[in-house]
Length: 414
Image (cartoon, rainbow, N blue to C red; front, top):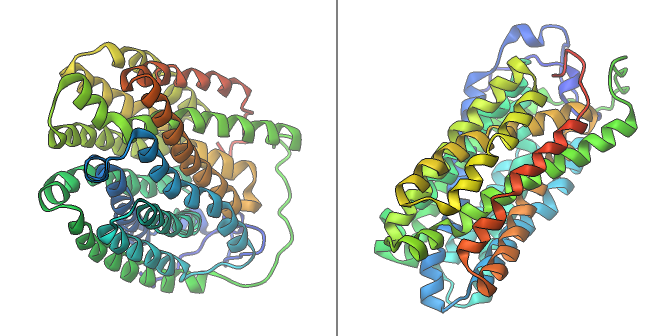
């Protein structure tokens, strides 16, 4: 993991520089580092997904309504969303190779607090601490994934996203096998996962440190075929809107799919958690496939297909039976999640010298939309029904039609 990797200066933000420029692509991806940062993403998102997976327990134990459940998600996502662009902007100026392990310590203490919480405000504080760990983790780990890509940026982002998506899918399974039988206190056992992540991220920090030279460099010349600043601004707004449609739909399933299945089909909590795992596992596979497909065919094409292509299936889901719902959720997860890597890499290539800030903004938007959306959808569910929420959310992928406003990127940045 300490083996140095030669990368291009354009992969970094303006103030953070790496050595020799030319051999970057020839060096190929640093697979050990990619595996390490992806596994850390897996551990990080496994712990995060536990929060949503234990909602039925918290709801029954503390007599919470759906709006209060949504506020727990908001407390977690708001911290992560608000701080990620700030962290990214700061690390653009001065990279912090060991900040990842320090941020993971926040998740460690958040899980311990959640396991012992017996008041609603304490639960909110614990969720916010886990969100803080996520805010520190994502911008700098995305930079490390790009550093280790060897020029295969979509592939590296997909490997990184795969760890997170698979980790998210594991939360419901672990909750069903451990938290449901043993209760809220068993959440403390998962702090050992946070400790393992701290150790791995410290080792990755030792690899990352020699890649950094703390001096500023001149801004690279823009490609002659690059879009104008006005088109870049429009494209960033469109990408945020596309991420909004994707993330809000996924948030609706992640936060309330368990309740939807219980309410409509009368399945047990554990069975509903396994159905949620199936959907989230499909998300993980789709997230991995999207990056290499973007490298091969162009990110704009993948964005088009992955968002608009999910629309027929999301429209059918509210009217399907139990087993048909499971099949549709797999198809939706595979299609809609394949856009994440392409959206993030597309945004990074639009503003290459604000890499950390752009990564933080887009990861932050994803978390913020998830949190705010969960709160709004919870309020809507209280006043109508969970089934009505899914009928409304089914139209969200139609926002993908805005992809028509995305510019063509030069050949070196597809």
